Image (cartoon, rainbow over all chains, first blue to last red; front, side, top):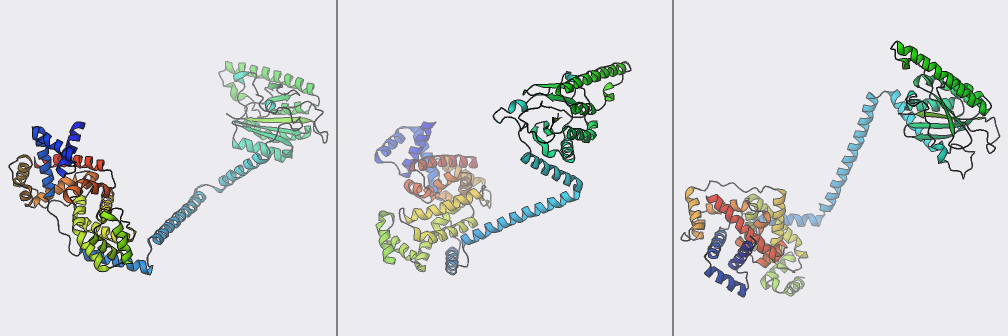
Length: 338
Length: 207
């Protein structure tokens, strides 16, 4: 195939008189001695002759005059600077940019009008308020959870302590983390005047943890303020912290009022005991209810008292903590999401 | 000014003849008569080359006009590194190829009448039978021109350009390479392929 192509190239070169003398003689010898090559040569020559024989078409009348006219016009335009290609192009680009900008502005205005018509003002205000609040919290409030601790001590251990349910599947998720719940907790902190005492807010995917360093009285107020949150929650946990990082005692099945009572207790060992007793009583009561309604085939889960999404973690008194004010408790509120 | 340009053109060596150099130098200096003579000298060849490449008389006339305008505009920048003839044809061919690429389907003018059987037979005899009349006699029938144009239409634009420049404009391979700004080897292979394809197209047309 390739040989054939090369042969045709050679024959075409021979026909066109483009070969040097040596090659030309060689091709001539091939044509004279090989019938097939002669036929191919003859065929190519006939096609070439046919193409050569195509008659020339006369030019249209006035072509020369038209060219002269166009040239004169070009020269005239160049002399008078009446029209410049580059200036015209620049002007065109500028106009296109202006048109694009106008289209964008129009689209923005239309979008705003449509938003104004179809989205209620209250929803918009809430959305903007949420956005602004989130932004301000992120900017100012994510600090170390225990500010009074030694700076050199590792912080991550305490921040990442897992809160493990004791009873497995019987303890459902504490609360559904929604913007609304989050907002309500922040609002409660503000209302009770202890927002400034919040030493850290730890936002993780699916959970938010507030660490508050405040007095017992303020803690009680906060829990009372959050009472309206309880119906939205399915369980409560009280985490009673101790001095050593990473060691928490978690007691489930405690309602918010019970948690409040526990927080009011002055001594740390007393709190642990109270929490344990209350939890045991709650669990026993729940099991009884469960058994009772299991007989009647009723979904007993519907009968549980709704409990708040609250947890309290506390450190025992620490000599390094500031002594000013009436700080006696460290409360951790955890909102856990799905 | 004219003398300076003439000197410059003479220094270009073999690329430009003395007469053409004088004509060009006057045209560069803006002499209207020289410009007109240049146009008259080349318009027929440029027009025919473009016509065979684009296949439409109106488009060919317009492209010829554009070619001369560009040539005259670029005349001052012409450095005589190549001959004026190939430089001008390069402008013409590039304009036409660009035009063909923009209008992917080249708008060849339709045949006024389909070639009759007699003409087909005549062409077939010529292409196959060695005793058939010479091509000029056949082509004199006029309609042969249309058949060849139709066959050219079906060629790839690059192959069409080399075939037209070689077989209609009678350029040699070196001139074609210079005009199209390609290697002489490429010219050789394109001519071979173009003619082969043309042969197949014409054979199919006369079957």
